[in-house]
Length: 312
Image (cartoon, rainbow, N blue to C red; front, side, top):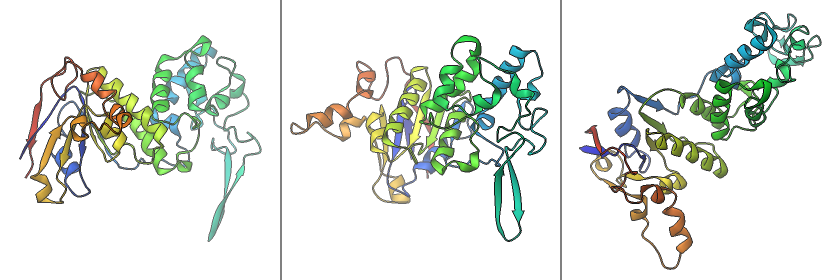
């Protein structure tokens, strides 16, 4: 079976569980040059890992501190020279109790700040490194966007983290304390930075609140408006309604579903109803406004459909 997927738009692949959505896209698209795949695999990290280290955000922050104070960047890493020698930069002391659970207690020397006292004397924009790592993503996004602390590379990463709904997390929060949904969003924000022409996302709304789904859709819109092609495997109705083009696999599972599919604009799947104008308006915007005057399923100026391959 040949499936044509339009390029330059937000294309959503839908279908019941077992219909072959992931097999279709991962088997035909993943692995090609210029394709960035963001799957459902869990991210790995120790109790010393945090959003700043995982996303690469800490690197430009360390360099900004070093440049502002005329010292080495290594001083501003809790895993390197600037770490508290008592707790080795963990901020807590772990006490093993044999068969009982390990007990954590705040380090008395650094008081949980993870750095040596001499390192905390260096500041950037009036804040030391410990205070910066204690900031929320939203607060840090503003902090690194202006004034003495202005760091474009750090701000760019923070902007993506806020876009996926993680504005409330702190930069130094251990990954082991994050929920599965939060880890997925950290991964999403990280992989969005990879260079590619086609982005494939496998159920990115997992664990997201409705308000965060809106933020995610805004992020996907910006990717498409920058000339990228976005393919999303998803069940979420808000994502389906927002799409420029939908590929819906059959209602059955297995081989039957793989041989039965439809391609259409979202609004053609939900015909206008005179009794529910509000829902009609919601389903036809903003994707419909973006496609106004263009070929069906495409944004203005988008590339023509591209056959991605065959599925048995």
